[in-house]
Image (cartoon, rainbow, N blue to C red; front, side):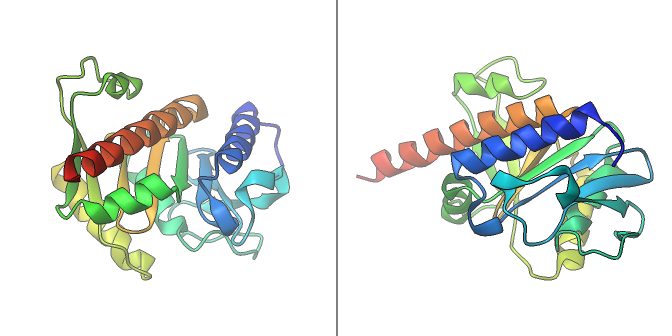
Amino acid sequence: MTENPQLHALLAACHWIGDKGWCPATGGNMSLRLDLEQCWVTESGKDKGSLTEQDFLLVDIASNQAPSGRTPSAETGLHTLIYRLYPQVTAILHTHSVNATVLSRVEKSDELVLQGYEMQKSLSGQQSHLRCVEIPIFDNDQNITALAARVAAYAENTPLQYGFLVRGHGLYCWGKQVAEARRHLEGLEFLFQCELQRRLLEAQ
């Protein structure tokens, strides 16, 4: 595999995510854009906390196929969709944390709106807790092609800024570099935990 500092950064992020418990039982998937035509995607069935460089497969962005013949993540189609939609995105992290999974089910609308949290400024372009951060929520679907089509239809009218939730499943988030994707993930996870705790307290 070609020496790539961003891949080393992604591996470190994956190990950090594993330590956080945000990708239990081989769940989740991560990717890194190589260029406009190809990206690296985690191989199916790998524990994200102990990944090595050999666990990333080169995938054609246009076809979702891995020339090696090995099997990339079943959700590769969502990664390649984001890369096709947003050329500036170079890293995508998909996690299965408890907070993202539960909050995506508790919220019954098609988006989670966050407001009033200082940590909103961890997201690129956010400068005040007074603004709203809107995270779309898509119903889960084992048919990734169908799910990707719904995400693409949404993106035609409303740009996806930081990421989206899949209901009862988890979070997809990204960035222009691995460091930005990792910051967005950590910021969103903090916000999800705060929002879930706020709702629990208000319900008492």
